[in-house]
Structure formats: structure tokens, C-alpha cells
Length: 84
Length: 144
Image (cartoon, rainbow over all chains, first blue to last red; front, side):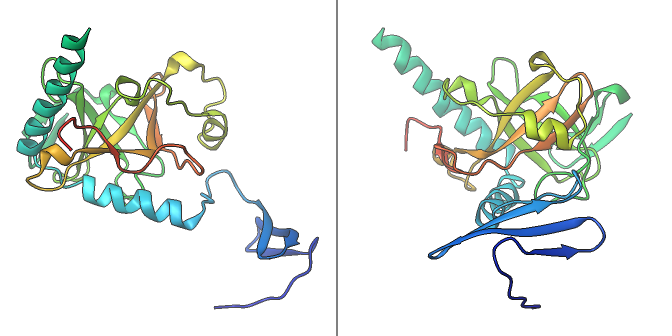
């Protein structure tokens, strides 16, 4: 991993069209600004990883499991109605 | 056109029904073409089947059916997708359901990675929502 030390206000360029600016350092928090082409996704990694993991799990759903789930969901709907 | 699937056999669908995802789904960025069809009559679920990978299919559902207060801000995403003239009625929002194998009563929905479809352009993108009040494992079943 390339490690570079920067001060607030200083920038780093990645390739021709990506710029990262250190906006503010406050205690243990670093505020960064990103400029990149629109098609470059910039995400907090833990959120990105969580969604990707859920996608991988969700991509293998069995049609028979969905039939069971739909049944439970319908059961819930009915229960809500009967309380009315 | 004909699409081969592992769950539904070969399905026949007109070409203009294809939904194009320039960035794919997270973790599946090379699979860019999908089709959407209902699970069955009167079911709230839809299948979001890859047209490029027979085994790849997601179960999706409208989040507004079980979380009426759910909302997303499509503006940034529309810019990224170059949907410059998109209006609210062009959009459909779905969330992806997860079911642990053999445990349908543990069905959840991923509320932080919704699928935003521009139905007029037949294009879609999976959004990444930071700081959402909703979970990536929002329980859908009454029998938890």
C-alpha cells in the first residue's frame, strides 16, 4: 500500500481524473472530498461490503423457499386484517 | 428473445423488456441485462432474472408494501446514470429479499441497497444508502 502524508487543504490525484482532497482533520475523524467521473462509484466500504454480501446470499434463493416465505407474509397480512 | 434460466427453464421475452444495468449489481458487475417478472399471481414478489447468467436471479419486492415511510433520494443516482430528464413517475423502487436456505420464515429485505429502475429508459442501478434508518436485514415475516 502506498502511504502519503497530507495536510488539510492538500490534494492527491489518482490517474488523470480522480482527485482526493483532505478537507479537515478533527481528532480521529478525517473529512475527505472526492472528485471523480460520474461512473466511478465512491462508497463507504463497510456499507458497500454489506450490500455485496447480501447480494451474493440473495442470488442463490430457491424458488421453493420463496413459496414458503410468501405463505408467511400472507399470514401476516391476514392477521393485520382480522384485527381491524 | 430466449433466455435460459436454471429455475424457470427457457423463457421467451421481447427484447424491449430487457432492463440494462451499466454497473450491474454489487458483486456481479459483469452481468448487465435483467428481466423482471412476477413470482406468481397476487404475490408481492418479483423475480429479477439475469439474461446473461441462467443461475443468477434475485427476489425483489416493493419496500412501500411493508415500510410505507421508506424513501430514497434519486437525484445523485440520476446524475450518475445520466438520466437527465427523469421524473418521479419514471421510477420503480424495489428491495432485494434474502432467504436463508430452507428457512423461509427468516426472510429479510436489504433496505440499504435498493434497486432503482427507470422504467421509461429500461435501465436500472443498485443504490448504496449510507446512514439509513433501515437495516440490510429488515425482517419481513411475522414468524420470526
